[in-house]
Structures are given as structure tokens and as C-alpha cells.
Image (cartoon, rainbow, N blue to C red):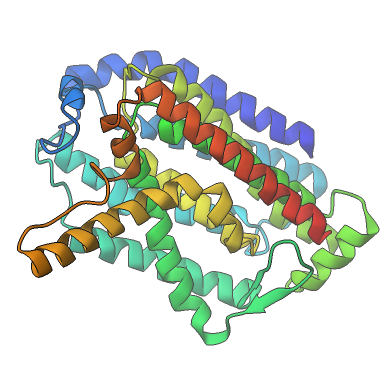
Length: 365
């Protein structure tokens, strides 16, 4: 299994490195440049016109690699390619998040030159539709329980599973989008986070021939009673995780500071969908907290800033701020940190918390 995951990572990396040099001039020719928000950090105004929508290449490399390697691996090991295979729900949520509200938002911003992009209501409706369908599928296929880290227990959410998971999909995709505000930041944490999820998927897979692992996966995932069919569930997840990690390394070649291309909502929504999708398909929703901590804090900082500003404006007649600017990475910028320093800090935090997340699952086994 490790061999196929390594192949997926290297293949996705190679695809990005091959396509991007030709894709960049094409975007410049079409004038698909980023429209910089006037209220953002002043230093970012120099980035006006930098090609956007580079996330298309990351998504293409990830999807193509996952499909090719999964089919080869599946044929060799005689997997089921029906709904017992996690490949299809994974592609639904990742491509769905990108196609329904990621790419359209970039198109409006970069082609129509309207910084607002999709209306917030339009985005929320699209996210809710994708989240609702995906959550309903997971509830039907996996049940309403989620694994509690560092224990051998699960928490059954019952009828509340679908609405809670729908909100989770909306929250994580938006969090990934907000995280993408500094050169290389989302790509960096994606490499680490998806590698962590990929390792966890390998732990869960019955291909890891350990009696306790097989027994406990059979208990927590009773929807499939054959080891070979459980392989068809977990291995495509690990393949997509490592493919996305490899593709993100390739994208960093062009997205690190000073960025030659931006990911755009096309890429951030794809990544957000991948993060929440693999977590839900493995019942590891709680592990989104450590692995996606920096993304989550981007959303939390915005909510804190907005709430406090409105509260103080109502109480004192003048709005006050907790941070110099939100999301949080912009606060660090205005405190004097360089973009590369912020990226390194976020990557280090993600790495430390991802190690804890992986260890929590080894304890589970």
C-alpha cells in the first residue's frame, strides 16, 4: 500500500511541475489576474494582477493521479468499484466544492474583474447542497457515530449527524478559503495535513495486517464485512491524500513568496472539500481540529473580530478590534512578520498537531 501512495504523490508532483510552466503564460495571456482587496494589507497591493486559479492544476493532478493509481491498484486487488469504494464520494465532495462555488467565484473575480465574486448567499447555498448530499451519504453508508481520539470509543450523533456534518463541510471549506491569504501558506499546511490523513488511512486499512487493527476496523466500520472491501474503502482515501500532498509540493514551487501564481477559490475550495471529506469518510472528524487548526483559527479570528467590532460599536458608538486585521495571518503581517516567517510558523504548528493526531489513532489501535 505504501508503494502505491508514494507513486501517487510523485505522479501528482510531476504533473504539476510539467503543466504549470505552460499554464502560467496562458493565464497571463487571458489576463486572469488576482484582484487585490483594497482593505487588505497595503503590501499586498503589489500583487495586483498576479495570475490566479492555479488551484485548477493542483486539482487536476490530484484527481487524475488518484483515479489512475486507484484503478490500477483496484484491478490488481479485485476491489469493488461500486458504492463500497470511497473513490466516488471523495471525488464528489472535492470536485463538487471546486466546480459549484470555487471556480465560479474565481471566474467572476478574475474575468469579470468583480472582487466580490459570488454573493455570500450563493456560496452558502452551494456549500449547503454539497454538504447535505455528502453528509446524507456518509450517514447512510457509515452511520451517525464518530471516533473519539485517544479512545476505542465512538460518539453516536444520531439524527443530528446530517445537520452537524453539513455545517462542518461549510465551515471547513470556508476556513481553507480564508487561510489562503499569504503566499504559500495553504499549500504548506496542506502538504503536512494531507500526509497525516493519508497515514491515518493506512492505519485503518486492513492491508496493515495486524489482528487488532482488523478487528477494530470491522467494529467501527461494520458497513463492509470483508477485508478486501474495506481495503477498497480506505486505500483510495490514502491515495488521494498523498496525491494532494504531492500536488501541493509542486504548486509551492510557484506559489512560495513572492508568488508567481495564486491558488484562488478553485484550489482552496478543492482542498477544503478534501480535508473534510477524508475526515468524514474515516469517521475522524475530531482530528480536523488539530490537523486543520490553522485553517480553523482563520475562521475563528474573523468571527471574533466581527462580533467584537459590532458589540463595541453598539455599546460605545465606535467599533473596536481584537486583531490588527483578520484573518489571523494578516494580524501577524501587520505585527511585522514576513510572509515566509508566517508560513514557517503555520507549517510548524500544523506538523506538531498532526503528529499528535496520528498518535491518537495509533492509541486507538
